[in-house]
Length: 66
Image (tube, rainbow, N blue to C red; front, side, top):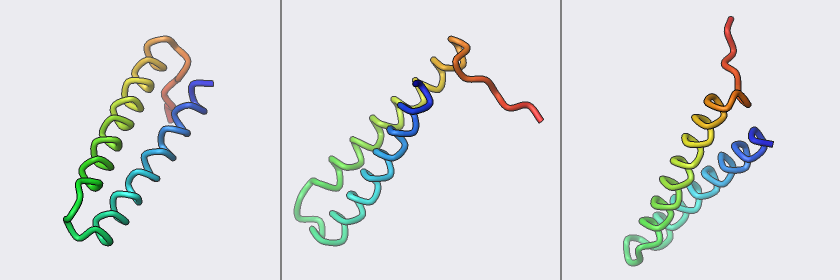
C-alpha cells in the first residue's frame, strides 16, 4: 500500500512539473500559477520524502543491497 501511495505522489509531482512548464510558457509571467505549481511540487516532494522515511523506519520498505 505504501509503495502505491509513493508512486501516486511521484506521478502527481510530474503532473505538477509539467503544469508549471505549461503556465510558464503560456502566461508569460502575468500570473502566479507557476509559483503555485512550484509550491505544490515542493509539498508533494516533502510528502514523498516523509513517506519513504516512514517506510524505512516502520520496516515496510527495505533497501536493495547488491
